Length: 261
Image (cartoon, rainbow, N blue to C red; front, side, top):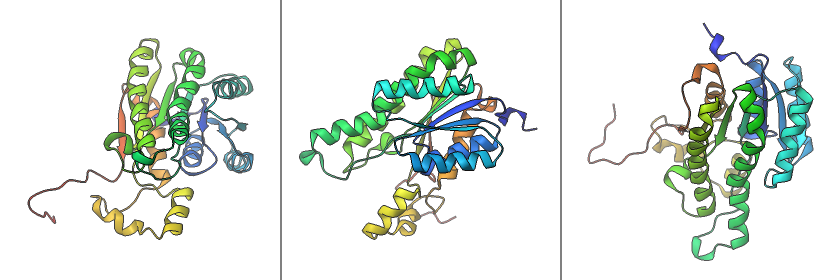
């Protein structure tokens, strides 16, 4: 029944794989049978995730990489492909926002940094991985954000970059679909990653109350996003490409009357 979801024999790279959505994705893909190259800038969390993956009986490799740099993204891909002998899946998860500030006071250097981390990184890694994915008829999933769909005040660079990720996804899907490479995006909403929880605690943000505006009445978990990524890279999604799908607890709509049930 679940043969189409099986990833046995496939190799995946997950960027930003040491924590949060990246870690959850790497572990779920491993549970589905894939061997994983976990990439990021800090070795300690990567090594911890590699140990978890190996405990599941899968092969794993930690790759230190700064995917904001083209040469580093290229080296990451070639290291993983050489180690495992193939590459089937790329999950461009590396990203984040550097502080919250209005556009009028935006530091151009911070703007450039957010664009590089969230948008350039996806292009660099995808471009480097394409020859391998073309050979394997593989798949890319880019991790965007609902900020890229609707915008979020105070993080204009992050919002613009994530919107760019979604359009990059669409164009790459159109260009690479004829050779069998699928490209999709997931757009998480408010998600309780380690970094998010730390920020909530530091600022006193009440995530439970804030999540009450979502139809499902809760914030997301990294595992919620990982489930969609695992579906999109599997054969069960073989006719899906160029899409950006929100994982955000449902649409937040206004209205003239309150509907309780």
